[in-house]
Length: 392
Image (cartoon, rainbow, N blue to C red; front, side, top):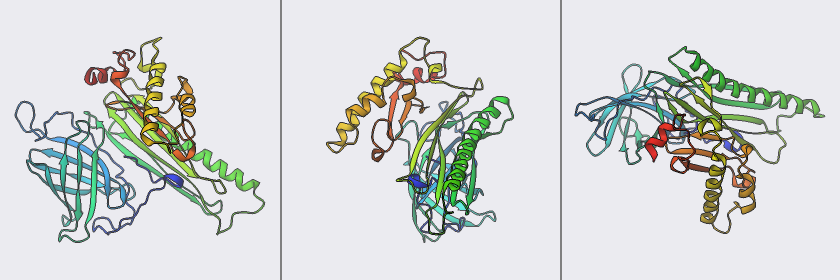
């Protein structure tokens, strides 16, 4: 789930159509803290392989009503559930506790700081996807009023060391230059080790650099204008959000969505950047670091992506904006075409930004390259070795 209140074309509709007693603000993005997922393995009933009951902690991201950035931490122990949920802009965790039955039906009551019940979640725990539990249902006040749909999906975070992924937020506005900035980026808390500090510095620096470039561009545009912008002029904006593709004791893979609008432009713009970090050894990963030396990994990735994009175009029918020439050029086996990649549990996720393989109107395009397609080139002792063993 994207932790982004992106502006321009990536704008999200914030604002609840109901007023939660625990959250009176109209907009309610993600909690500023994420918590470690337990490394203990449990089955769908919460029982361990040895037959005993073990607690299993999961982090979920999702929405209630039209608020798109809910985050919930749930600890499951047998039939009991407990945890918290919260939003980035508010940052105050709301306590939840309840039960789950043998059919996966859950009931969670929420409580404010004074232990007064403020709401109820009723939904269904869906473990059908082995990589991510889903929960869908309805939130309401304790008396059943002000109902709103909610949905949650498990995030791919599985630290076993007590670390947490914390969302940091930067907001800025300039009424003279008429621009707004809203950006979010991840930080790992719970450790002062150098390898953790380096990751935190990388993510923060990426966002601060984009903000600095945007502010500089706004100042230069204002200096070139004959007249300062008036109150009736449209405002410029920059929105930056991130998505955790994977976070475990060895790797952290993060995709950033960067979008916005410059006053006077024909349309908004958006692009992606990624940080893939070897947490075990404390270094940034390059694409070549994942594969055997001198292997033809780029040709294999390219061939898979071209074939997949052509399948997508065919499925879209005669009105598809994906055309053969664009695909062949934008997905060719060149390093510059494969700068935006992340590591997932199922494969390598490749993003092709707008204009790369299709016109702007088509937006970005995505391909998931399964590890089975890469197994002959992946370095078995490298960062992806663990996935080759479990996915092939």
